[in-house]
Every structure is written in C-alpha cells, then in structure tokens.
Image (cartoon, rainbow, N blue to C red; front, side):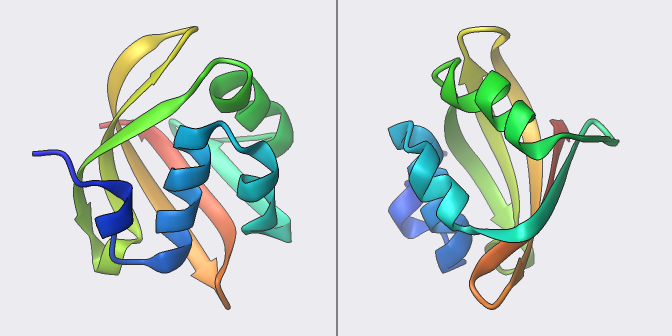
Amino acid sequence: MTIAPAKLSDPTVRAAVTAINAGDRQAFLSLLTPDATMSDDGSDRDLLQWIDKEIFTANGHMEVQKESDGGLALVADFRNDTWGEMRTAWRFTVHGGRISRFETGQA
C-alpha cells in the first residue's frame, strides 16, 4: 500500500519526497546541509551530479511503500526516464531539520 508523501512521519523527509515528486530542485536543495553527502548502492557519489542525473533531469518520482525508523528509512518504488521503475531503499540522516546524508539503493 502506497503512503502519500503528506502522511510520512518525519517532516524533513516528507518535504524531500514532496520536492522530488514535484520536480522542485530548489526546494530539495534547501533541505540539505551545506556539506550533505549521499551514496547509491553503497558507493559515495557527487550529490549534485547524482540528483540532477537521477531525479531532476529524468523526472524522478517516489511512491513510498513502507517507512521505518521514525520515517528516516523508506522503501519506495522509484521511477525515472533513464531506468524505469525499481524498488529502492532510502535512509536519511537529519540534523536540525536538514538532511546531512542520504543513502539509496535497490531494495
């Protein structure tokens, strides 16, 4: 069963998923700490390059299926124009309402 972004437990993660689904790069970037990092399938990536390639120029969209750890861990069907749809896991590290790190990969 899909969880609507507005129903996600953590307000920062809720805002991040909402920004991704709206294609709102500026809103997403405003949620990150200045030194935010990320990894994809266990390998650290250049965050700005990755979000542009995988989300914002490829019409990325998340349909959250499950959340845990107070809303900081998600399982979502993620789709974009490059790869199609796949089941993904996302883990967010949030400090003071900003994301300092997120990790994603196939679930």
